[in-house]
Amino acid sequence: MLTKPGPFLIFLLVFSILRTADAQEPIASREQNFRVELVADGLTVPWGMVKLPDGRFLVTERRGTLRIIENDTLLPQPVEGVPAVWAQGQGGLLDIQLHPDYARNGWIYLSFSKPIGDGALTAIARAKLEGNRLVDLQILFDPPPEEATKGGAHFAGRMAFDGQGHLFFSIGDRGDVTTPANNAQRLDNVKGKIHRIFDDGRIPPDNPFINTPGARPSIWSYGHRNPQGLVYDSATKRLWETEHGPRGGDELNLILKGANFGWPVITYGINYNGTPITDHTSQLGMEQPAVYWVPSIAACGLAVYHGTRFPKWEGNLFAGALAHQKIVRIKLEGEKVVEQEILLEKTGRVRDVLCFDDGYLYVLYEQPGRIVRLVPES
Image 1 (cartoon, rainbow, N blue to C red):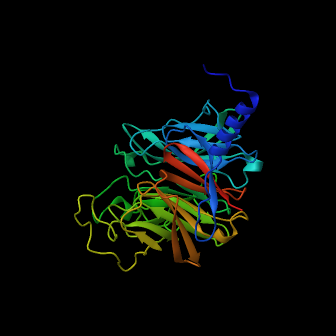
Image 2: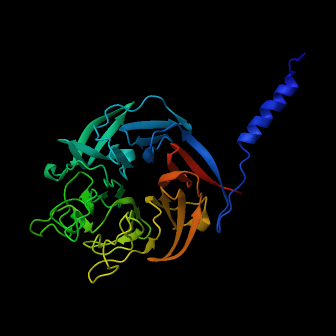
Image 3: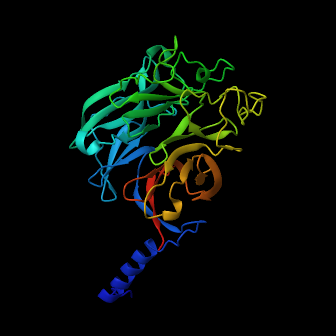
């Protein structure tokens, strides 16, 4: 006959379960050992995240929902008032950023694939959070309707502020495979570009192509395929980007004003069917990547680390990878990459990597839909 366990046995059982749940071994890296803590799970393809001054997180889900995480708990009710999105293929609700002066003005910025006819193209909006609703929604970058397409690929959608009143954002080439007159090489459309606007949507008068006849005035750089990593390093005043290549040729780029990054005239990748895209990996007047990856890692999400919790990682870049399910730590000396290290390999499809004012690194996993933080191992 089974006997009912006593209070001491129940205590030992509960203590054992708690110890087991918290008993993950530290992970060793070349510079810093760390542990992984779960922040929240149960998300559906999370894409971007910000940390509010009160400690809560806002997380976008590609299907078109905005979620709140409070005290490491995913709240069940999505935020209301999110703009309608074209949630097909790679499209949907994409990145989210806070205005650098959010504590004063309350502006939250969203990128998303805006439905236009039976197609879509990437748009930028801002709004304010009141309770559980977005209010005062404003469209800051309304994409040209004639450029919307039905394809589900290459919306890009990453955003980054430079702290000087400018917002950078990326739009992919939307899967255009024509060469050499690809969307990315033409200045008369917004696709395959990094763009720069003021934080209220106005076009800065010193943008590089503002006086070029026929050019879209928001363009900052061009010749990009699908830039899904974008971060501005305020310490060095450099804008870094990662983008998907085709089969091979994913890139880390230092973005320069008015520069042409070559896609698809030059690339280190090939077509998915194994045929060549071009015979050229370099050409006069086109930028070379700081690093390229062959085979492709499916680069997605990019952070620069500044903080006191991981002092040996100070100034390093952290690039996420979807298909290869890992994070690449990238050590820089000035503009040169001097070291790479693989972290968290085969732990899930990494959609984004983030660093906030608390000094931790956060990782958004697309599959499974969860968020974790990296905590230093003392």
